[in-house]
Length: 482
Image (cartoon, rainbow, N blue to C red; front, top):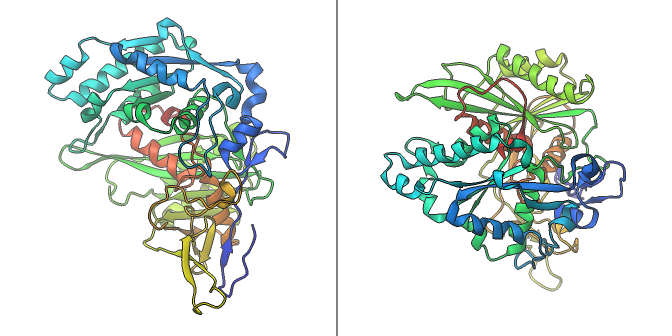
């Protein structure tokens, strides 16, 4: 971290976190994840001899549309030229050159067409969304019978199915319903729609889809480098979110807490879900002291299982609602001490800001608005809260390392408000941890996500498990829900 000279107390400019692409060579690091993959290959390259040199893709979609899906996947094998985000996006050199493994179709037994009557049945169904979900999950269950013949399932959902993707009146979501069944079977899935087939920049599609397939096949594209960040190698990061299911009369049926566990370098991404029962306020669910102690104990057990029984020296807990006193006490009960525990509430306030240029010589004696705030800008508000611009201008993330680059290129970026409800220490360390964890989303080709992966995937998991009333109380790899 470097501190920018300023008359303002508690104003910092955090360096862009580095990503690691090799477990033993500290020189194989990069700011831009795509440049790192292109220059060094993925983090798990050394494991290819152990797990094989080919990713096998199972297919599921309407029979008449499967060839379009095959064409899309074949496109990943060949180079593609970047047509957008050129300061950030490299040309796509081909799947094998990027990931050091081949990509190919699974055996015929793992390429399943949907029933030929699916369109007619959807037109006649009383609830076409539920019917389509049932057809797709039936296909997933058939594929589970030949699980040893493929690595990832790819669905193709054509444009004519789009009206059945969501139903807000019934809280139905086709994506979540299918993911829920596949996760219970231990199968990773990727959904392809016409948006991907028609998108004008084929390099963007290739980077995004290729990275997602590689990760869902069980590999690791990159991890966080702990070389220069306040990411202690013995720290556990936990994200909490809640899933609330309501009954037909609007009452709360149950509340489930999702706990997402990360290593200091972003590895070990697993979660557990714990049913905390009925009666919670769906607008502001929180846990009792006993419930939080149990959730945190299970979460810490996940960390210990991956680290030969060793406990972390520091525990950082993120969630998007304030920590109630009972929740903090439950964390302390499970942890056993308060000195190395931080409970951080992450919200998005209505603040806005722009960067200002210094006055031009010979011109008017006032600053001029220039560009979006720099990503990594942090401004401390008081002794327990800090504003952090996770989104913003990130020149070091470009291919040249110097060009201006505001991801999305629209609007004025809003900061995150980090409020520490428990813990101590410099707030810029908490901000730097959040900034780093915003780069651990393997399901896209972006430089960063708007939230740290702790919170982002806890939210996704909570949203998905609403469709799994009988979820087994065991750890799940987050790739199952990507």
